[in-house]
Length: 264
Image 1 (cartoon, rainbow, N blue to C red):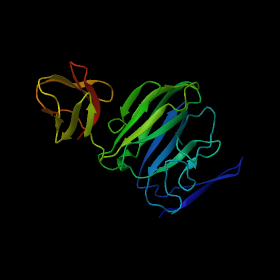
Image 2 (image 1 turned 90 degrees about the horizontal axis):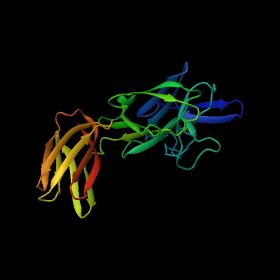
Image 3 (image 1 turned 135 degrees about the vertical axis):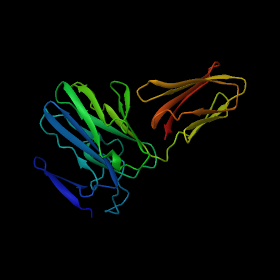
Image 4 (image 1 turned 120 degrees about the vertical axis):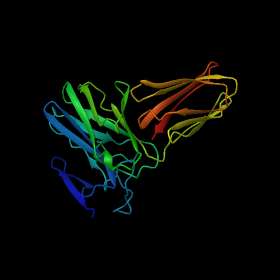
């Protein structure tokens, strides 16, 4: 049973409504701790519309989202950001963000106001509620670091008031988005697929040497092979843990592709 909980901001008498009980079919809760304080924000996914005129959207909607009301200036504040119209006036920060179910890659900007220079710990909770096979990444735009949150749901960093508040992006890859992609470049057609621990590469050119590199999301090379002169290759990746990887394939004649592949 879903119901609306109304919050009032006493200074502006702004009424905000959002669904609080059974807050969607699955969700991700982001908590931050530091400087002796804690704060959190919630992203939830729900296609069930309790208001037929205002189902969850990628922009601001009064039925399903809640604006952030800033608290103690020394307290770290974490929130998602509205990037699509219609936006609420004078506030693009959300403490609760309702979105439709995941059917494609979904990027959610995660804003952060540190309050003071200090170390901070981000913890991503309730990821177990996401559909099986979902991959979730955190990208730190300031440090150019990407972390697989399904493998490690805690992220430690430093923050300062001078930081850009739009520092992070949470990327959701649903289970139906696999690493199978067709690429046409330099008159070559390459297809990379993953089936039962075997990476299949089709459409390569004969009489060429390919350098295959597979990287984890920390940028570490976890597998390297030289592939010779065939139009199709099969590479055993059973020794790699499940998760999201970057596959790089290059020859000696200026052809190169890089693709993300989910290994199960």
